[in-house]
Image 1 (cartoon, helix red, strand yellow):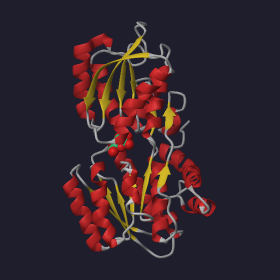
Image 2 (cartoon, rainbow, N blue to C red):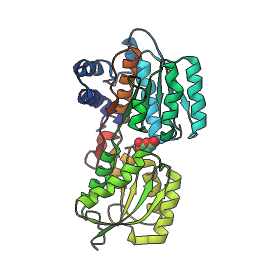
Image 3 (cartoon, helix red, strand yellow):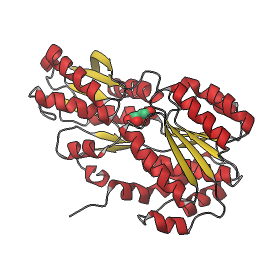
Image 4 (cartoon, rainbow, N blue to C red):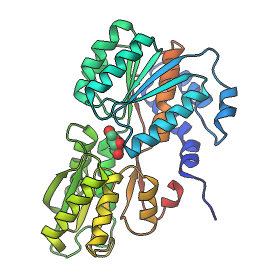
Length: 354
Ligand code: GAL
């Protein structure tokens, strides 16, 4: 029997998530903010046209800057944003920063000249967030930062005009460690008392990469395990780089490698190709975990080719970012942070996320 699709499943739960996030952050205004979330968030699988009929009165132009279109997870996220903001009747333009901060800065300047009402920014470099705020703030245009968390001081420097929508990457790292602890051998396939692993990392400046690297291992250590890191590879969220590095690692370290941790699913899918080419079998002589719950990774979990992954809820985050944008457009109070939970994806629940 066909399950509902990942996007429909997430959409159905997104309202609950966004409402919880808003309620959790809210002060005196929380209940009205929360109820706004449920009335406007795209809750059903109804097509965009029917949402557009319910569009908020008035129109707004929204400029969106994505760090790089050639990123699988951000591709899902920007499609969600386009859909949900469109349902509110807003005019939306999305630019590809091509992983180059100066390109993105030019795009932001163009949006400023055009006089957009709200900017949604996924910075190329998180360390450039303060410069971005300093560039935008004279125009008083609000900014919703997404996916790459700037320092709190950056948000504080543009009070009431700047917020962050994201997920706490410590949670995703912890879940990765737990996925390994839940295996038959608790990660110690050869029974030598040590979990020996390699790590494929996202870009080093990114807090998601840093926390996932740290907290996946912390979960093992907190459970009393001894760990041995053979090597940490800088694979920049990229499938091909991870494929090459894991192929080299398997050639170099062979059976010593018990676990391949990947900061995201694109890298895990690259790792899987090399694992299979090397004649290794996930679940039998090696474990493999990622983050994002991309469709191919969820399928791999279902097929037993990945030990597990962690849902990075693009629907929930796009819903919260849309809600923050709407509040800015309508001049209502906006919280400084909106957090969306990660979810562990195992063979048991993977079908829900396809
Ligand atoms: C992470 C995601 C990665 C990549 C990165 C970009 O949250 O897991 O796959 O999209 O964001 O900043």
